[in-house]
Amino acid sequence: MSVSAVQAEEKVFGWVEKATLKPWGIEVKAKLDSGALTSSLDARDIELFEKDGEDWVRFRLKLENQASGETFSDTLERPLYRELTVRGAGGRDERPVVLLKVCMGNTIYEEQFSLRDRGEMNYPLLLGRRTLSHLGLLDVRRTFMQTPDCEKDAPLVAHESKD
Image (cartoon, rainbow, N blue to C red):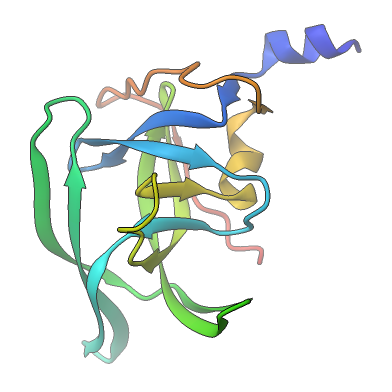
């Protein structure tokens, strides 16, 4: 099968796309980064706590909604999916990971997102290889090739816990 035949079957995304966080409907700019394994979301005031004998995470989102220009600021609670240890030039960093839903193109994807303060970054949402593997093809020469458009009956790609 030729490359063009494969591209005809799969959606093609640019290295920057708009994505909508569900169920809140917040449209944000996302960087698609094949160099990162796990996706990451800008979150503040991150706090681990226990609820009904399970580990949970409370965090605050403060995101500019690209569709409306308004700021979405809310404190959310999600079950802790796992903890991620990141090793880099600055040493080791422990980050909580939660499952969230994001609309890319016309499909909703339930994915793992590590929570960290990305306030100094250009993009509040980074989509890593785990997420990219579900999307389609990545064209690093292009941006904004898909528009998030997920209605109530949009297909959902549920998270698969195989890692």
